[in-house]
Amino acid sequence: MQQTRSQQKQFHTLEAPLPLWRGGELERVTLAYETYGELSGARDNAVLLLHALTGDSHAACLDGGEGCPPGWWDPLVGPGRAFDTERYFVICSNVLGGCQGSTGPSSVNPATGEPYATDFPVITIQDMVLAQVRLLRALGVERLAAVAGGSIGGMQAIEWVVRYPEMAESALIFGATSRITPQAIGFNLAGRNAILLDPAWRNGRYYPDEGPSAGLAIARIIGMITYQSREGMWERFGRSPATRPSEPSIFGEKFDVEGYLEHQGTKLTRRFDANSYLYLTRAMDLYDAAEGFGSLAEAFERVRARTLHVGISTDWLYPPVEVKAEADLLRSLGKSARYVEIESLNGHDAFLKDWDAVTEVVTSFLGGSRPGPNGHRGAEPAAAARRGG
Image (cartoon, rainbow, N blue to C red; front, side):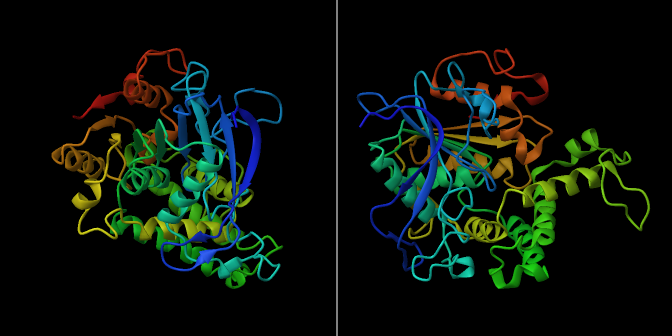
């Protein structure tokens, strides 16, 4: 069937149980997704966007109507934009294990009629991508013009080109590598422990109550610190006093950075499930694209897609030197891999903030030169993208 743009969240339930990478299966898996643009008659213009840790299927709002909030990559998706919906059929699904319509810990376990909670199995990046493969086939898509995403979304893009080399023509990987660093695993551990030690967690069985909101807020604060850069935090906050309303402190006045982080922590608790945070961060920890192969080089030998690896100059969560090393490894194997580095003070978050630079990178790689969302051709000087080889 011909697929067309839908601004409404849609749902697809996989026809068969989903086998899991670490054993077992999930009986009934539903994925929430949105589409933008129209699938061509040749079915060769589909692009899959892969969201970051706490993102969802709402990548963009093309209509701009009331009740349709901007999506997480809104400035990049639409007619004439980097992911041009007059050219591409753009798909974005909420990941397996999420809490925005896709099957996750808060979903009903068909075996018990109650939410899975911690009966939900440990999931991996491999499981997320297999579920996406099945969704796309149900939509009539057997091959993608591109997969694109950052952070955990970028890790999924790597999984796509390694495990399903025949299904992706190209991949755009922002601030991501084939495995995370021990330091990143440590930060994830700290965030998860904040949730686990919250008395309201109750071994994950807090539904339908609010759950461990204090612990989730702390986890988000820890995460938000890792998404910033030292230079960017000095420029944005310095040591200025708090400008946001917040709870008073018995330790005296608060700094602006404290008010910002507390606001971000509280904000996440209103839209995200703590159990999903536990499962998704662990999936990041566990992922290694070389798993099942003799080495990363052996895994990368399978890649057929053109790949774009985007490092961010101030990203210490996925250091640009490590992003570049993976592009270099692919090139040494004779693959078509390009490295570009975005100069930004925004740290890991640059792929969600530096719209002109990201627009320039995407349009250059996919072809076509269009004005960025702010009317600029190319990038702002403060967030310039430089080619790295």
